[in-house]
Amino acid sequence: MSEKKLRILLADDHAVMRAGLRVLLNLEEDIEVVGEAADGEEVVKMVDGILPDLVLLDLTMPNLSGIECIDRILEKHPAMKILVLTMHDDEEYMKAVIRAGGKGYVLKKAADVELLSAIRTVSRGELYIYPPLAAALLYQMVGPQNPGSKEKTEKRLSEREREVLKYLALGHTNQDIAELLHISVKTVETYKTRVMEKLELRKRAELVRYAMENGIINA
Image (cartoon, rainbow, N blue to C red; front, side):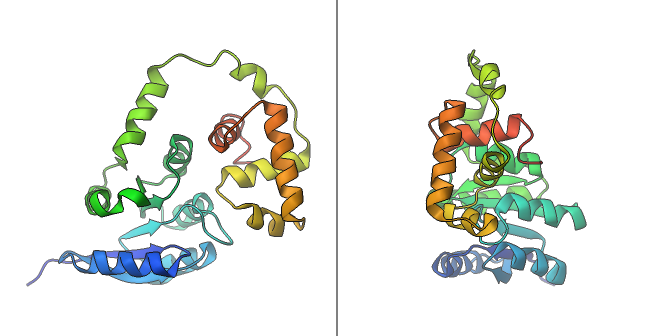
């Protein structure tokens, strides 16, 4: 009698990426792709319907971001194993995933060498973090603190600026945010610029860190 295969749900909004992943994974004797989803809402519904062993999830998805998908899935299925496969080479996104309950974080650029190992690690109930990001996180934990961070957190944002910041930190694109808030993409870009100027930040990763440290993501 053959061993039970690891049943995986693929969640990525790019059909070509899903097709490539399906071929890669189905070549493995112990892995079976049992479904594909192209947006966040579909991911949540398919998890309910097919109950996979593991969800391989993109971080930037239409309708619901990857972080929101993790929250929604684990609310109903707290034992579900979720591995994020993303283009975001950023420890702040990685920390957001782990805090939300994700069990792994791998970059798409390293999928050919890291993904299978990550899948099997997460399937065993262990945590997997893309090694360079794990090293960066360790350095951040033991490295020098930013003396200006406290001052930045005390600066005030308007309600709409906080909304834009929240969605940016959750991984939504400018187009997604424009649709969610019923404003133009140009207006979203204006709010993003204003937020970064007020907080004296320069990179999206710094926005994510600020949002996490100040409870904006969960607001």
